[in-house]
Image (cartoon, rainbow, N blue to C red; front, side, top):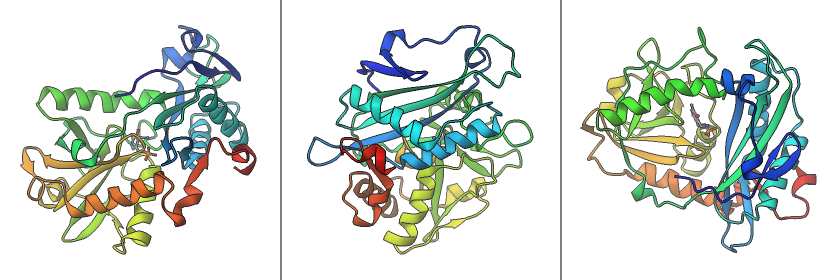
Length: 314
Ligand code: PMP
């Protein structure tokens, strides 16, 4: 999905050529997946010159929360991290859609209870633009339950959590589907492997509540705002049963990389008429307007990378 054309990666405060950005094989980051991270999207605007990063501050605050919950012995300010992200994007001269990966690793060679030393890395790679009609997927309910707070904190973006999603995705593909939907241990709908989920049932949009084993998704929060403010159809946050997905008119994934991804079939049953629905299209159009800087009310969701004030203002 992503093409790696980055020339530089920032690692521990220094810009280094991409193939020199290495971590020690004995570091907890490698041995135990002790890396917390954010996947952040940048969007080119209509001029072809500028790049806006979508909800950068919110991603950085969530990275701080991940470091806190995983008991890292140091953190970084939003300003320090903003500077690193902007430096990397500018160094790679990225001016069109991109995916930025900002990670905080536990280095050294200690064991699994290590809390440091902590180092940040950041890279940015180009990301192709895709039309909504090319994004529709068929999903299945995974036999792997979503991790929950009794074992691993789901609201944290720690690399180790992603083995849960990975196993579900591999299973879904082996079974002939595109994507997995995970249920909680109690059998209620949680989310996808790297995305949250909305359904529209009887005309009302709904999404699982934040304590149902989901990541506290920034796209989900943005879409809740879009439903309330732009589309005038407030969404509910509630517990959702598996079989409600079979009865819903529309279902879609949302996430930074997924953006809005229609789910047109669940477990072999068409969602609605099996085509992308009007509410999903309206959310997509509004979301695209926001990320591309065309929405007056959503300007504060964007950080303009090439404006002089980019670092100072945030
Ligand atoms: N759930 C999981 C497990 C994810 O990895 C992601 C992607 N970060 C999401 C949901 C969507 O979160 P966001 O909208 O903040 O990208």
